Image (tube, rainbow, N blue to C red; front, side, top):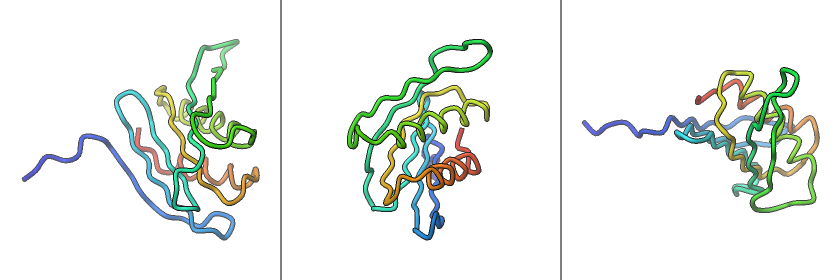
Length: 121
């Protein structure tokens, strides 16, 4: 029997704001990768990493690697998702791909909720 794929991966589809949303999440040794798409593409690719503890709270740096650089809601989503992952016990950086029809706060909250509900770390 062949060994299992070494990267813990989950895929699932759920409805967010009336739109079918496909997720694939993988836990690599050096980072967590999350793809959430309603468009069938990677969309905007962001990197989020924890920098330091200030007064007991983590600070995060978010960089847009590819895609929309003028959409602050995507950076906010990446920062909050990284924070939620750290609170769930994982300190690895996040590589986040968001291909979404809407960039509303409700959509972003629902994306984060789904990621936290399906941990791969």
